[in-house]
Image 1 (cartoon, rainbow, N blue to C red):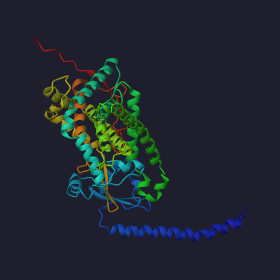
Image 2 (cartoon, helix red, strand yellow; image 1 turned 120 degrees about the vertical axis):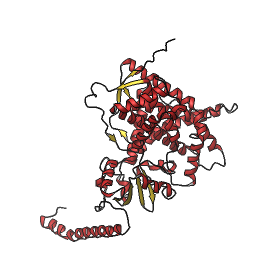
Image 3 (tube, one colour; image 1 turned 180 degrees about the horizontal axis):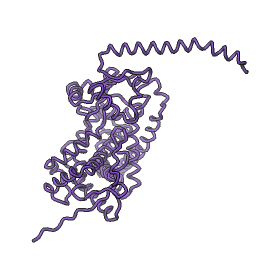
Image 4 (cartoon, rainbow, N blue to C red; image 1 turned 180 degrees about the vertical axis):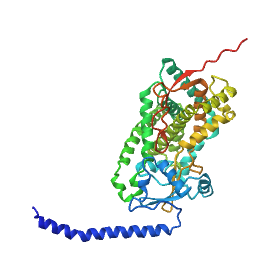
Length: 465
């Protein structure tokens, strides 16, 4: 049925009162919210806009935007992000107050909508609860306890040796070294040998390791991406940015790999039931735990998937990013590079891989790793009575990564051995403009442009007799 112009004008006029009422209602809600916001004794911060709050101030580099806002409003400021009140901490002293003195209060955290069902069994996202403590205890005692790490020292030495040999082959062939990729593949295989007793990839297989790395990096980016579903929960069901769907697909790709490992181990156990052959790795520990009737950690296939996703995602990505950023910073600062190499030469001996027992003798290398780790470290969000704490410095609470003892050893071994075995130079096409130090925001800060460098093996002259 067609309407005449007069009828259409009448309909428009009749809608005006309703539109006016809607605008006045929204304006009233906004003004009342501003009044309530001002009476909550919150730290200073920018005045929020209707509905979106201060979301428009975050941009595509939230960490830099927050650092800029902190210069204006101070090291403790409040933001309204959508409907969520957020307190931002950018001072080590204030962070220590929150995360050490009031650790128990801020130990729980908000769960990103993008993580979907994965968060139900994920150690980083579970609330402070008996189940969370049980899962952390398993990792702390069976994976990252000092005696467990010491028992696998030979494995890390072997993987670092493989890395050095691979880089030497690239040097001989005249190929540039993708520092992030080789560090990622090494970290990935270290974890897979610890958990599954075999490598998941090969340093020479660029396709397999690159694909796994791309999936992990995408997960880190998507999980750290500002998501309207987190700040306007009423819209969460629509998944407007598609992040939940994207993450589900990425998780599924990893889960297929992990399911294949578990299925293969169960078949081996069934076949060798009479001989009780066990590899004694972390997968065996988990399967044994799931078989116990009094197991309180709720081990099942979904928990296995979440644990492995957490371990491989955080373990391989963070360690490799730290190595890549550290190498990039050293190559940009020749004096720092020279000082690090001189220390290695004097303490370890030129052209040698370093041993874990020698790390404590290398204070300058430790300083390089520590400073780089602060840059790469994941920001944390914690829930407390409908507010969030966003800590832009390194975490120091009970939520600190349980895998840090292993990551600390791996990063020092990999970085120290690469520096002490090779001389590093930029390719000719990159040298005029230098290294691109731009980053991609996510759960960790990744280099936007991978660091690719040319290396020359350091040859050690035999001693005169």
